[in-house]
Length: 88
Image 1 (cartoon, rainbow, N blue to C red):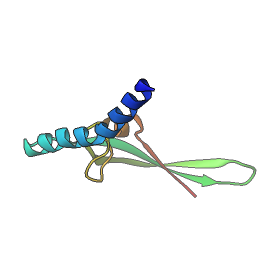
Image 2: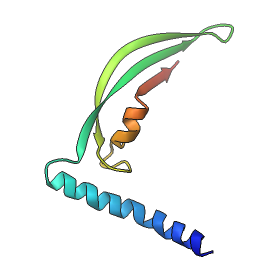
Image 3: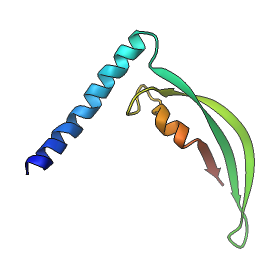
């Protein structure tokens, strides 16, 4: 029971601590970064086939934090998931 309670308290404190550290970084002139994202468009065809179109790359803003901040994804997440796929 103590382990579960410790995990619950740790999870409850993770976001406020991460936000405070991120705000200090922003105040010192950092806290935001950029990541390159590849964009693809996928068109569904007959017989369960798909046609992929490469739309190019975009540079997106991301937060240098553990969790997403300021409406931008966390840089570690965006860099690991650097593909944006739109399906039609």
